[in-house]
Image 1 (cartoon, rainbow, N blue to C red):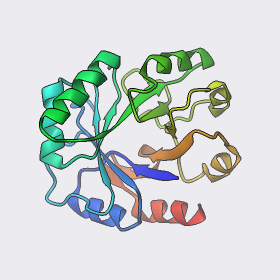
Image 2 (image 1 turned 180 degrees about the vertical axis):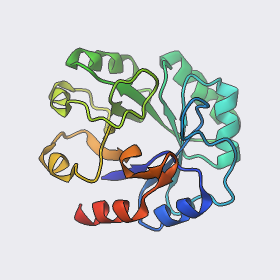
Image 3 (image 1 turned 90 degrees about the vertical axis):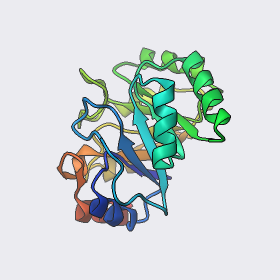
Length: 206
């Protein structure tokens, strides 16, 4: 099970969270986010994969961040379509970067899952999140039961309001394509600053 901790930017906090043994660490490059990472921290993780989170960003901007941060995963959290993904892969390949690509979708009803279908075979993972007025960061959990109607083969990560008290819900949730969880605002002391003790306790309970 992939454990991704997102919304990082403080070097000391990055070191502490990395030491917990997580798999992916996310950096948000959306200027309107409270967790926006405006500059490269003085320390970047070396033991987990670096994930860049983008919202309707220009492809050149994504490629630049991939190079500047040494990203191995690109998460698209806006309205990016199949053509965008194809062009992004081509642009990354032109500079010898190969990245895992994740496409996020906000779900309020089972019918929202239909938006995934055009991207099957073009992205490596989906990420399912709670709808918000902006893009992500709601701190609220959506109704996971609707994922019983997800029948694509593309694996996905579960996001949206997963917190210290979510272990029971996670233990009950089963889906053959669920390959990870995304942890963010429920494990924070402040936006962009994770509560390492709370994360450690949560991971130990898992």
